[in-house]
Image (cartoon, rainbow, N blue to C red):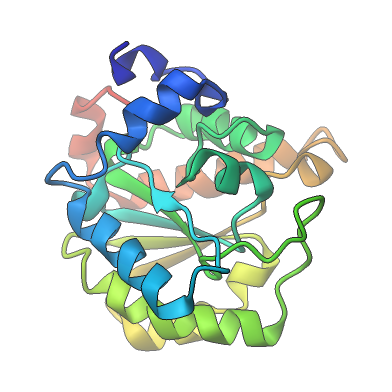
Length: 217
């Protein structure tokens, strides 16, 4: 079944057909350098590190916005991708709020300050300073692969602690901060979902207004 069948709805990577289709796209031109980046990172770190791929349904090396979260969750390891399409509630929230924000999906990619899974299988532990420092050492190589990048959105408090490091690496790139779209945050107050949406709309507002001519999200 064509992978496009799974676009436009959250949690689609819960389907084994969707996951297989997404894996088949990993070497398409727009995503191949990022796939190679992950493959090299897997070799460098060792087989006991679980590092999901970038989602080919995002913008790849043409992305103008990089979302940086904390670390992959169990469902990212399950699907093999850092993706708003993962079968969990955090990804579902992120999927829906992005649609509302007006930022076209193909202008974005999603990654983590700590690229590898730091959980036990049953639960993920918070990233510590060593995790973040290790992840940041690999971030510059990723940024080198994104020539059109204009904005980095730091999603969640752990990612936001890296703002000064990223500003030094790329002083010309705009930095934004957004709350994390986890159910723990979104469901704790009726206003919290709107806080994330407001943050993303600020990103959309600073970007080229020609984006409004590209309705595909």
